[in-house]
Length: 243
Ligand SMILES: O=P(O)(O)OC[C@H]1O[C@H](O[C@H]2O[C@H](CO)[C@@H](O)[C@H](O)[C@H]2O)[C@H](O)[C@@H](O)[C@@H]1O
Image 1 (cartoon, protein in one colour):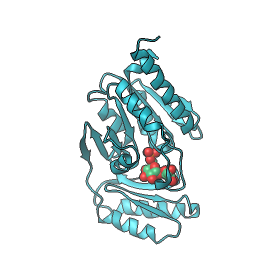
Image 2 (image 1 turned 180 degrees about the vertical axis):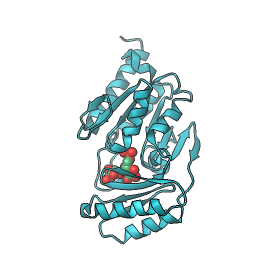
Image 3 (image 1 turned 90 degrees about the vertical axis):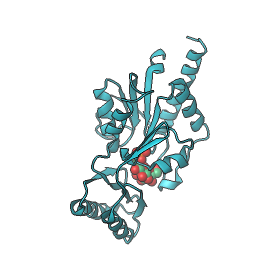
Image 4 (image 1 turned 45 degrees about the vertical axis):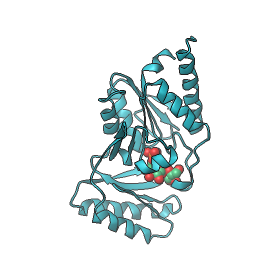
C-alpha cells in the first residue's frame, strides 16, 4: 500500500460513501466513517476532498468540519476554508421549483446554485419533470444545464462539472503532484472519472450497473467503506514503520 501514501482521494457521497435512502435527509452516516475519513486526510497530508451534488452546507451537515469539498456538482468549491461559487439561482429556477412542487410525489430540493427535482416516489412523472427542467434551461438568460442522477433531475450552472472540480483541486496543494483516485456511483460522476483517467489516476465505479468510463469497480457503499478503512489501517501501519 506504499503507493496509496501518494494518492489524492476524491469521494462522492450519496451511493458511494453512504447508502441511498428514500429521501435526501434520511441518509445515515455510519458512526465509524467520519473518523476513517479524518485519519485518511491526515495520512494523505490533507489530500482528500468530498465531491458531491449536495450543497456545501449539506456536506457540512453530514460531515462537519469544513473540509475540502466541491458541492452542487462543482458549482461550489472549497479548499482550505476558502469558497468559490457560481452565481446564485435566478427567477427561472425559482419558477421551476415552484411549478414542480405542485406535482404530487415530487420532492423539490432548492439549492443556492441549483434545483433538484426528486421523482423517487413518483417515477411516472419523470418525463414531465424532465420536460419542465429542459424548458427552464431553454428560457433562462444564463447558461444552465440539466443533469440526471438516481431518481433525480437537476438544473445546475452550465459550468458545474465534477471533473473540472477535481482538476482544479489537482492544481493546488496538497493535491498537486499526487495520483488522483475518484470513487463515484452515478452518471453525474462520469466527468470525474474522465478527469482522473486523463491525469493518469484511478477511477472506481460503485455498483457497476451502468456503462462507465471508470477503470475499476467496487460492489457497494458498504464495500467502499470497508476498503477505505483497510487503506487507512495500512497507511497507519506504514506511518508506524510496518511493511
Ligand atoms: O454527488 P452525490 O454526493 O452522489 O449527490 C447526488 C445527489 O444526492 C442526493 O440525492 C440522491 O440521494 C438521496 C439520498 O440517498 C436519494 O433519496 C435521491 O434519490 C438521490 O438522487 C441529493 O439529494 C442531491 O442533492 C444530490 O445531487
